[in-house]
Amino acid sequence: MSQTCSIEDEKHHGFGEQCGVVTGTEIKITKHTAQTNLLIDFNLSCSHWFFQEFGLTIFTIAAIVAVPIMSMLADKYGRKPIIVFSAILAFLANLAASFSPNYAVFLCLRAIVGASSDTYLSVGSVATCEYISEKARAWITVVYNVAWSLGMVWTLLVTLMTTDWRWRYFIVVFPGIYAFLLWCFLPESPHWLIVKNRTEKLKKYIETANRINKKTPDFSECQQSSYHEEKHESFKALLGSKKLIWILFANGFIEMVISLVYFAISFLCAELGGDHVQAFLFSSIVEIPAGLSVLPLMIFMGRKTLVIWCLVFQTLALIAVTVFLHSYEMNLAMMLVAKIMATIIYSVHPIWANEQFPTSVRSLCFSLMNVPQSLGIIMSPYLKHIAMSPNWLPYVVIALFSFISATLAFMLNETKNTKLPTDVESLTNPTEAADLAAYCSNTSSSTVSSISKNNTKSSKKTASNENVTKSLGTVTFTSE
Image (cartoon, rainbow, N blue to C red; front, side, top):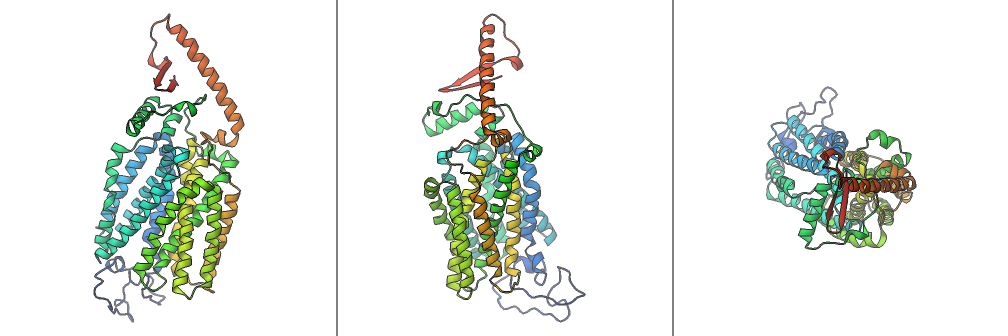
């Protein structure tokens, strides 16, 4: 699709111009088996490459606008309804895009897909870290990477099934029908339920977990004397913490760099020459061993050390690409090494970042971090169109960004075996927040004890004023 003609005429710069229509141009069909593609179907063969790649650009721009808003709603109303709604909307918009009558409709649908897809990816990433305990959280990377790699292989297989872009688009998104099952099987985040004092739903969550796992764990080791006040902190609270702003900036820059490297290599591998299908296949397959290696690496090295070393090796691989620019095999090999490193970072860093953000604003922070990540995705498809002299300069610039990311990662804290911060105050002043929680817990316990004695002499009070103690096995919930 990048091998297109260009029209050099100051009077004609529309993006709907066709070879053969504008005077002085003609179409020569050299491969009759290629029935159609998106560019030909929408008369974009001779348009500027900016418009040709705009399907991904509008996808990402819509995500930048929508995700922070949807993430704030997820902090307020829960992770599950936002994930389910956005996943179903993305599936329906994707199906509709394959029937687009023109490029304008296609771009509008791509915007909807971008807004909804990035929403369920962002909120889902936050929820997954909240579903799974710290000791088992490394398994997220295995499932995520295997699923992502299989998705890339599925895309390649569909490409070989048919030459019609509409059928390709329709078939490749069809597994998204699973979104309708999420409402039945996806639980609400237990961390969110705790912060919102939804003790009844939390009891059901634990009952379900015990039934599925066929065991009743001893919760005494994780039981604590703390008081959870329902909190929904806003963007203003986030801006009031210099520490949280610094964490956002550092993690955002890292996300921008790894998304730029990851997607740029995915696109450039098929543009190096040689067998395009083979290059894309290698680019997809290497992610499976990379994803599987993340589990033991996270357990052995933790989050911070692993991210730093992968960024360093990614920097070295990108510099090596400049040495082997004229060798297809070595160039591809160095790109795949850089992509393996980017895949590992892409797997570990979201978990590490989520563990740094407070629960009360975790979805909001993660969505804000995704803004620079989206900028990296926007820039990635245009790299193959930009002619820079010398031709190794783009790789050196990206390598420099990668090294800066490693430096920023070095200045962040390790989160392995640490407790997730509940709110902005517990992140900014952890010692003071712990003292306040202990004080509130003692006060709350005294109040419950006093009311229990009075209740033996008095009649039942209204539900809004009643203190009830609910027990589930070894777990005790106290709520007003």
